[in-house]
Image 1 (cartoon, rainbow, N blue to C red):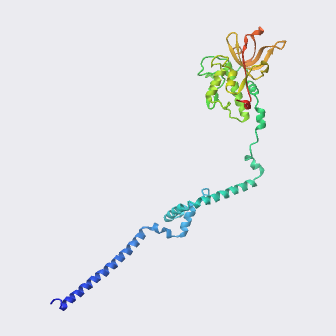
Image 2: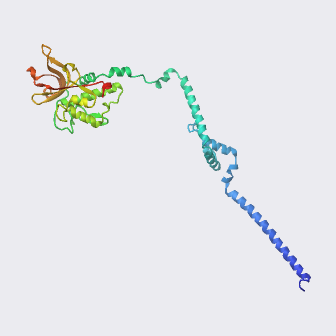
Image 3: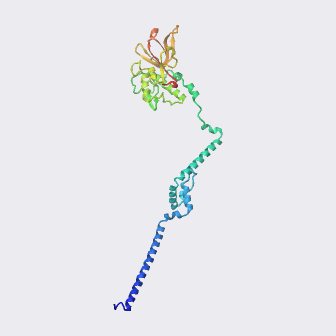
Length: 353
């Protein structure tokens, strides 16, 4: 108590309070300065964050560059090259915000282009329109060309010079099928010519070759794929070929007529009087041989009775392709069996089944 009443105590107390006040003020000033300095330093180290407040012109140019049409004229300096890094980042951000409105702008451009195209086309002279003109209807040509195959067959056989195609019949079916040239159907070989290149043939092969070429010629005239024989696949045409070659069993069920009827492209002619030039015909002889030919006409006696036939084919007696006449056994002049004659006609495409 004696110490508290002395003046020295109050002097020490006053001096202590003064020091504490000074330290508190100094701390507040230092904390405020540090906060301001930190803010300035962060702004200096992050220029991209300030880019949205940079020049509006840069942002607008970047946006226009992002929306520039693909088919614009080439430039010596692209918009992307002219915009600084901060503007490029802003353009990328702006592009994301415009994904809804941009297709609308593109639709307007396309509509304008289409309108301009139509206007330009309308102003073009008539001669320039022929490229876009509709294809003339092929019906008249199709109606005229869609006949039975006979006329096409006759055109094909007329293209083979006589004496240039030797006769050859052997058992080397893997390498030779009696045709003068390789025949391709749907990209694969369906019949092989002799590997020697001698252009040899035999009756089944040469008549199949004539059928094949005639079918392609008619399809070509009708505007149809040349590898479409009533929708036959490659394997189906192979089966057709085996019937034609009499390689699928008894001749009564394996012949040219059986082939065209099975695949819906033709019919068998039973009445001999209905046979006509360009039909295909298969017959047997009494000596157990047979022949496949292109029929030309019947040979008749003085009473008009059919006693033989005149045809085109490839045979050993003429050493290849030639015209031949043979007679039926009942005439006493030949050995063709009248009860083993099969006549086939390929019908118009519109009559396919």
